[in-house]
Image (cartoon, rainbow, N blue to C red; front, side, top):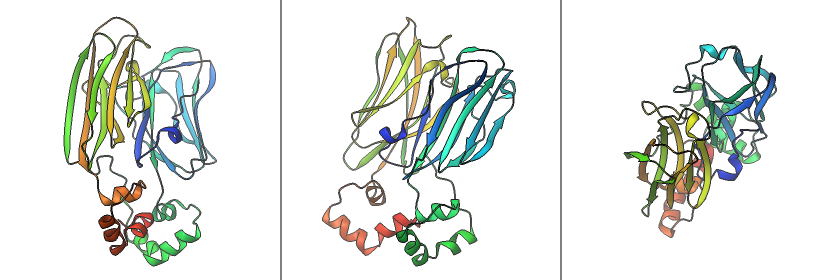
Length: 298
């Protein structure tokens, strides 16, 4: 069973941080659990790896033609499913995620995340990616090589653009809505984190994430961090954000959400190809925003 995130189907407002959170059955030997091939025109940052602590299971990731870029030899030493390992690795061509185990394991709980970004010219230079003729022109116009020589660009902050935070705490004993949020005009809502009181077994309840009338993510509560922690995300909504619980086994379920609210900026409208007013377009042209956004200098 592939647990790769179908990012091409669900990406809308990059950069966005998505999560795969479903248990998997492992057979003895090698188990390829997710493969990402040629993410162009995006790049992926593999991160947010979390594992149930289990001796005798190892994890490896081959990335962009290099073997064992990530190698965790025994998950008995992992931080556990409530936490994340300190790993962030860019993927520009190919990533293969694999488990190795000496015996079969049923319903193994683990998570991984990918930050999906549309690379700017500066990012392409930083990662040694091929430049288009437009990229070459922008790199020269803004002297990007000098900029990169002077300092290392900061990693993208998933909380960027958030002006207000909200936390929701819900208890449900049957399937139902956890949150139904309508985004005010000129604003954006960003789902930033989820956690749950974990059930004792897989497939007891699922958390569904819908934004702007598209179901984009489903998580098994068995793989989520406990209520004391949270799995960080960045899922942007400009119309609606709906989170629901699909209960498969009787019980009481506790879910916690964190989301952010912020103004929809002109820079973001340009990044996401949204329609501009005549006044916005005039301002963007006066400030050279179209080129600056593509170059990555703003």
